[in-house]
Every structure is written in structure tokens, then in C-alpha cells.
Image (cartoon, rainbow, N blue to C red; front, top):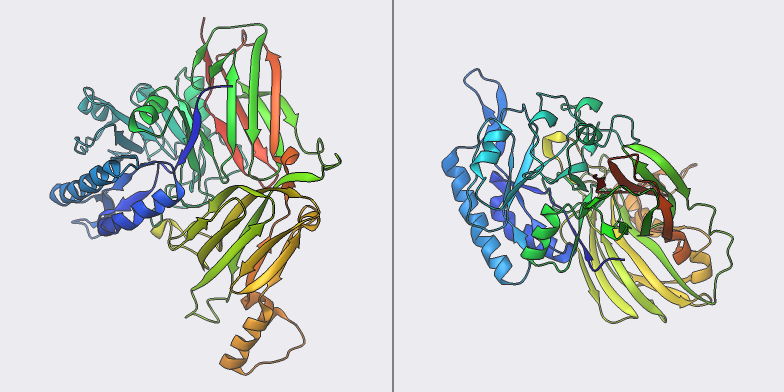
Length: 511
């Protein structure tokens, strides 16, 4: 429907002062997983005050500038090597206006730390800079978004979802309770309140990650651009051609009367709305939202399940590797390295990387074969003092087209698993590495038998092969007429059956 490509990134991975020398590793991780990267340097830390209490504040400016020059050096080098990066940093001010990540088109600017948002806007009024608010729905005055000071040019879109949860409104099903010290959330500062006040901005999602960039499940930003060059990505930024996904990389192509999301349309009693949604898992429902009220709910569940499948079937399934020994019982076993491959006689159409930590690799040989190496952990330190991340697996979502009577062949750590495609489409499957954990428990504790099997199940590594979904289950196309004479904004929100979500930027209706 449009001439744009979809490019994904995490616009909110904060590398800290004490981590700055890890920057090359962070860059390599983003080059392996994302299409471009606006980095958000985090110049804050817990500083001991004269009163004895530790208070979060920025580091000495000389230290920040040294970090910034190191960041500039690597951004310049990475851009010269052909991977698009934007320099950025987190600004918090006095907390009265909310937290914002500031990004620059070029690599020539320096960070500033005024107390108020308007001063920040003024400081960069003559340069290409944007300031993106995040975790908006916290309390006003205490790092929640202040819509009375919002500048739609400087902040053309906002972060509606991250590891904090969803700031869209105060009654959505994704709470903001992970960072317990900052909550609870309130509707007074939420994203929808900004539209209610007449502001014109788009939405993204991104991680607010502090240990590993691009954590799977903490949100990604998608942009609609002609290419992933700095110029084309920046054009998408300032024109609000952006959207957010909470987990998997859902693709959405959405327009009204030929105008793409983020744009401005004229009122039309019979406006033509068209969109395609391509999920990574089965789509549950799609909502057309006018002025923050669901106008139409389009079910997708129960529209495709009973349709007969063709001899040649296109499908997706997720492979997860992880779980493993209880750290209370085996404190020395914190990770496992997996070596594997996948083969199909058909065609490997796409492979989505569901990665949350460093140390992963994928090498697609051709349309039939791919090799991979994965390191899984029981958890990550993402969030640092802000709370643990319950991330236990690493893996992939494979999209394949093949004869329904063929097998997909997985080889993991030298063991071959032949997976009939018909069975993949019927149910999920767990492969516990029981023999391995039996040897471990025997060698450590001498235990070989017990009346219940918890000791072995709770401590074994597992392979999960999620139920496959045919193309009809993860693809939806809608073409319909809607009335745009009775609203100021129209947007799309869609849900996968596994809870994954996509939020589009609105189209703005103007006389």
C-alpha cells in the first residue's frame, strides 16, 4: 500500500558511565539484531549526598564529556562502516516534565542538563534534535509526562511501552509494576491524555534496557522509511511514521485514503482504510480506535483454524532453548551454550532472533539450512536495581514454506530431532534433557531415585518447540470504509494470541 520498508530498532538501551567501555560489544549486538540504532547514553547514577542518602543524579560533567567523546568516536566509525547510528542521551531535569531520550541527526552535538523541558527544547532549537518521552504514565512531578509543556516538533513521538509496562492508559492489561519504586501509574499523564489535549505525536515501544540492548519482550520501535540511511530514518522520525511492538516483530502496513500512519487527513464520511498485519504468532484481534475509543473490533481468532491446508504450507514456529538448573541448588551453573542447526527441504523464508543476552549467533547458509549458537541464562541483570528480568530462554521464530508431509530437521548439541510438519501444526512439544540432569544430580548428590520426579524436571534444561501457525493465522488484511468526520485521531492496535501487541501512530484528522 505504501513505498516504505519497515525497519526495527530498540531506541531505549541505556549504556551507563561505568559500562562505556563495553560499547563495542553493544554495537555488535545491535548490528546482529537490529536495522539501525539510536543509542541512549545514561549519564546518571546513585550519588551519595551531603546528607548521607544516595540520590540518583548525573555524574560530573567532565566524566560525562569523556564518555560522550568515546561514544562520538564509535558512532562515527560505525556509521562509516555502513550501520546507521544516532548519538543520544537520557535527560531527566528536575522530574517536573518527565524523562526524555534526546537524539541528534549528526554527531556534532553535546549533552546539556537544564532543569526544565522548555530549556532543553531551546538549547537545541537550531539543530536537528528530538526528545522522546518514556514511561509517561508515572505521577506528574515525579518523572511522569507533563503534557502542558509538550512540544510536538521536538517530541514527534513517545514511548508507549517498555520494560516498565504500558503507558497507553491506566486500564490496559500491561501494568507498570516491574519498577516498583516508580509506580503506580496514573491516567493523568498517560499517552492518551496527550491526544486528548490536542497534541499531535506518534508512538513507539522500546526496552529501557540497562544491561543488554534490544532485549526480546521489552519492546521494539518500527519505522517506515525508504531505506535505513540516516536521512530516511530521520524523515520517518519527524513525520511520525513509527509504531511499537511489545514482543515479536509484527509488520503493519496501514493507511487511510492513501495517507500513511503519522500523517494528516481530511474528514471524509467514506474514508478508505486499508491495512495488512503480519504477526510472528497467531493474530487474535485488531482494533480500529477513534479518539481513544475502540470503534471496531475485528476478530481473527476462529476465522482460519478450520480452513483446510494446502499441500504446500507456509508457517511459523518458535524454538526456545533454556530453563535449566535451579540456582539455589546449583549456584555455579548460570548458563548453557547450545550449538544447533535447522534444515528444511522447502524454503526458509525468514528467521526472527528472539535474543535477550549477548553471545548469540545465526548463520543462514541458504534457503534450506541455518546454523546457530545460543547461550541461555536463568535471568539477566537487565534493569539493575530496578528489578530482575524473568528471561529464561533464547531462540528463534522460523518461517518456512514446505510440503505438509515433510519434516523439519533440528540438530541440537549433536542430537537430531525430525519434526513432522503436520505435528508442528497440531501442538507444541517439550524435549527435556533428563538423562543429562540425572547424571548431574547423581554426581553432585548421589541421588538416583525418588518417589516424585521434581528434582530432575526442575533442574533440567529444556527445548520447547512451539505450535506452528499457518500463514492464514498470522496474516490479516482489512479494506473498509470508515467515517472520519467525527474524530481527531484514528489508529490501529492489534493483539497476538500470546499477548504480543502492536500500537500504530495515529492518523490525524484536520479540517
